Length: 245
Image (cartoon, rainbow, N blue to C red; front, side):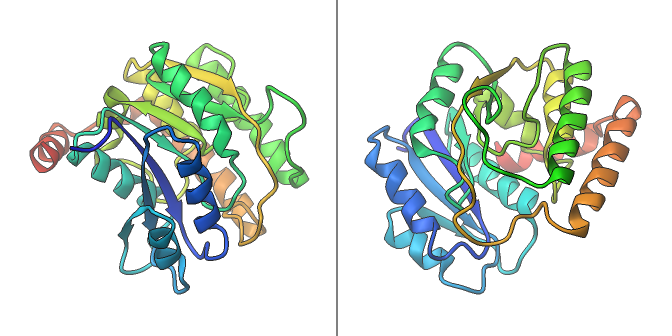
C-alpha cells in the first residue's frame, strides 16, 4: 500500500539537478512517495531520479509541463493517494517548505499555494515576468475573492477532492497556472496561500523565457476571459471517472 501523500516532480532535461532534489526530499523523513514524471528528456533525468530513490513515470517524448503534471496527478489518483504535493525539479523550490504545504492541507485546505512573495526576498526574475505575475495575481484575487500573490507558483499541495478535480482531459497541457486556480475556486475548493522560500534556478531553461512570455500572457488572458462560458462536458466527466476509478 502506498503512503497517503505523493510528491509529483515534473522534469524535462533536469539531469544534474533532479537527483539532488529527490535526495533533499527523502532526507526530510516525511514519508512521501516521490514520483518524478520525466517528460521525454533526452538526457539522464529519468535514471538520475530513479537512482536517487524516486518512482519514475516517463513520457516517450516531450509533451509539456502541464501534461507532465497531469500524468503525475492521474498516477496518484489511480494509486489511491489521498493528497498530492508538487514541486519543480530544478532546485528552485526549497524542500524544507514541503512541511508548510502539508500543514495547510491539515488545516482543511483543498489547494495550498506556496508563495515566494509572502516572506523574505523572492529570487530575481525578469521585468516581464514580474509584471505578468502581478497582473495575473490581480486577476486571480478578483476572481477568487481572496488575496493571491503568486499565481504562477508550481509549489503546491492538493487534497483528494482537488486531485479528482484535475484528473480530467480539460487540464492545460502547457501552462496550468491562474486559470487552474480559478477553476478550483469555481468548483468550490478551498484555496490557501502560505509563505515559502524559493531560490534561483540551479540550471536548465525556464518555460517562462523569451517570446514564450508573450505567448503565455496571451494564452492565459484568453483562457481567463473564456472561463465564464466554459462548461465541462458530462460525457468527458463520465469517461474520466470510468478510466480512473
